Amino acid sequence: MINDASSVDRRFGALVRLLAIDSAEGAGSAALEGHDLHLALKGLAFDIPAFLRTLLVADGTVTMAIEAYYAEPVEVVTINQSLAKLPASLPSLHSEKGEEVLYREVMLRGCQSARVYASAYSLIRKAAVGEVLYKELVAERVGIGTLLRNTAKGSYREILKLRSGGLDGELVDCEHQLFDNAVVAHENMDHRIVNRTYCVYLDSNPGILITEVFPVSPYLAEA
Image (cartoon, rainbow, N blue to C red; front, side):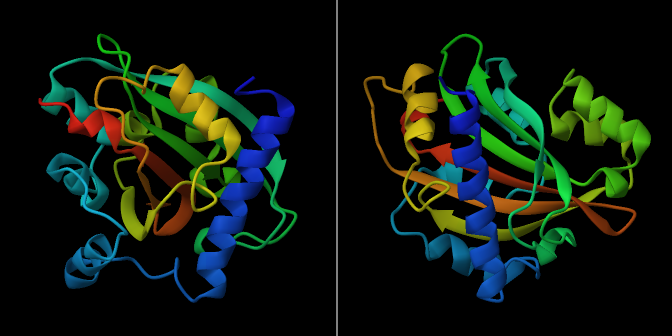
C-alpha cells in the first residue's frame, strides 16, 4: 500500500536523510537565485522538457501553472498526513533532532488525463505557521500553495536545491508504486525524475520545507 505505515516511514526517512545531506554539505540554507539557480538547473544529470525546467525555477503555485499549460484541472490528492519526529536536525527549517513536525504527502494528478505530474513531501512547523494556518493545513481542503495564497499574504518561497533523481537519488520502491499505480506509465514512458526543495517563510521565519518530485514522463506530452 502506498500509504501504509512502513511505506510512509520509508519516505519520511529518505526525505530527512536527503535534507540532512544538504545541511552537511553546506547547502540548503541559502536560496538559489539568479545565476546560481540557472547553474543548478544546468547541473542536472540530463536534459528535461522546457515546461518542466520552468516549473523547477518558478516560485509560484505549481498546480495553477500545470492547469494552465495542459488545460485540465489538477487535483491535489493527499497520500498521508501525520505527526513525526525528526531523526536529524534541519537547519533550513530551524528544527532540531527529535522535534515534532506535521509530515504531509500529496500528488498532483490531472483530472482528465490521470497523469501524476508531481508528488510533494512537506515538513511543517506548527509554531512557525501559527494556529489558524496549521488548522487549515490539517483540514486538507486545498493544496498548500492555494492555502498560502489565500490566507498567508506575507509568505514567500526560496528555492534551496535542485536535484536529479527522487528522495534517495533514484526512487524508493513506494515512490515507484505511487507513480506507476497512478497511470504515469503511458505511451511516452520515461523513467527519469528530478526534484527540488524550497522553504516557505512566514513573517520571515522558515515554516514549511517542501520537496517536490517530478517524473519526466508526463511532461513529454504536448500541451
